[in-house]
Amino acid sequence: MRPRSRPEGAARVVFLPTFARITSRFMLQLSVLRDQTDLVLAGLAKKRYATGPADVAAILDLDQRRRQLQTSHDSAQAEANKLAQQIGGLMKSGDKAGAETLKIRTAELKQHTQSAAAELAQVGKEQQQLLYKLPNLPHASVPEGRAAADNEVVREHGAKPELGPDALPHWDLIKKYDIIDFELGVKITGAGFPVYKGQGARLQRALINFFLDEARNAGYTEMQPPILVNEASGYGTGQLPDKEGQMYHDAKDDLYLIPTAEVPLTNIYRDEIIPVEKLPVRITGHTPCFRREAGSWGADVRGLNRLHQFDKVEIVQITEPEQSYAALDTMVAHIESLLQKLELPYRVLRLCGGDMGFTSALTYDLEVWSAAQGRWLEVSSASNFETYQANRLKCRYKAEGGKTQLLHTLNGSALALPRIVAALLENNQTADGIELPAVLHSYCGFSKIG
RNA sequence: AGAGAGGUGGCAGAGUGGUCGAAUGCGACGGUUUCGAAAACCGUUAUACCGGCAACGGUAUCGGGGGUUCGAAUCCCCCCUUCUCUACCA
Image (tube, rainbow, N blue to C red; front, side, top):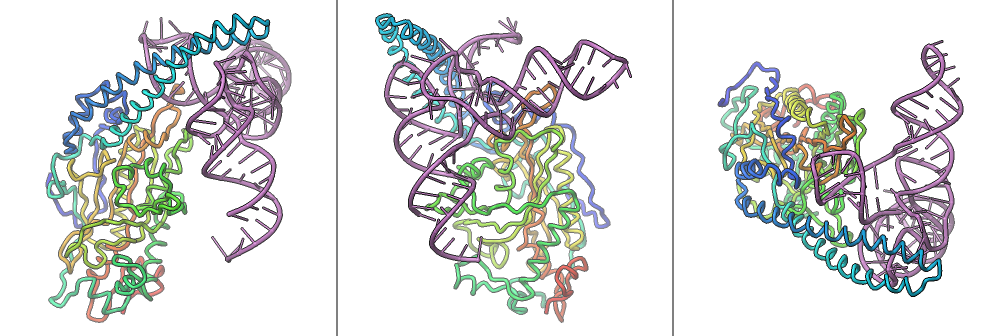
């Protein structure tokens, strides 16, 4: 139940019971809110979503109103359509007077359909705004809890290195070896936009290539997506409207700089019905990521710990509902294999309800041990969104029997560079340089920094 | 950025105000035929929402949004996008 280090360990895949069967029906779609209200409320409570009961009640009220309006609108429209045909017939046969008589009725109907349509649009809009506010429901295995301290440590791997008394944190190491320059970034752009120099720049490129190669070998197709996205894409993966302020926005063209490759990669499949034989979708891509992260400064964000721009390789899967939790396990295993090859001590956390992301049903965080800082750094987050994103994206497939159904979307960082670099620098420092793990030597073209 | 031409179902491609969710062809699926297959023939072939246990019925959708009209794929306006030429660039 509690942390257990597994120093010898090949990655052991977490066993997950078949909750997927059940939870795949808990998408935040209206039908589920209607039919399984209690379960939705319980899930929202676990997610620590305070206004759940009020929001759900409001949504259901609006829903009832919406359906009434729809029915009334449709039947009036049906009658009007019939009359329009009759009028056409009368006109042809030259019965102008008869046509005029019918027009009186169509005028009434038109007034009715117009006001019903207007109200319908208003009600629908209010309802959708409320729906967008609701977070995803947590998977049954998600632990109860409010914050980071309540996350469950699934396992730990690797021995923490013993550093000497003069070990330096990475922000001193990068100065010592002149490989990353924050001041220069401030001059060019601002805080949080470092300049990577010489071996530092080459290490970045090496890591990106290493991660992409590993992902490709694991069956992911490499993609190079745009790093600016439109509003619809932001809504599709759930960054909008929830996290509007965290993205850089170009007002002139109404485009957003991506906070993660998840956004463009997953939106490839927006409004798609994917043929079953193409499933599961497995794609990967490297992009810079941009985060405004306003208002968080201090010791925890020194150096490479938190940046406005950083590089990341992302892996994305889209699967049939029954497969998604098995897919999440393979993604976590893949990420672990990267950390093992980089010889970094790490641990896997299962996030508690209160600490999980807005759109996620189950999230594993992977943290590496940063020896000189003496703390764990999050380097990856792998999540199953079940149908939450798919519902917004309208990403579907034809299930057996020809029924169109929502797919499950998943993603994970594999990996984000800055904190990996921080841990590599700190953990591998020696008196005469930083000894890089063997797997990177050929990628870098050198084995030691300094 | 300027000028011009386009955007119709899985694809190709008709359709310029009336019974058009949309001809035709191809593809796909089901059936007849066949020992089997091909060919031929017959049929089916979208999505969303509403009502219904269901069968089914209704509404909407011809790039997106708005408008004119009793009635719009067809007319008008705005936006997106593709192509060609010019301009600019990598």
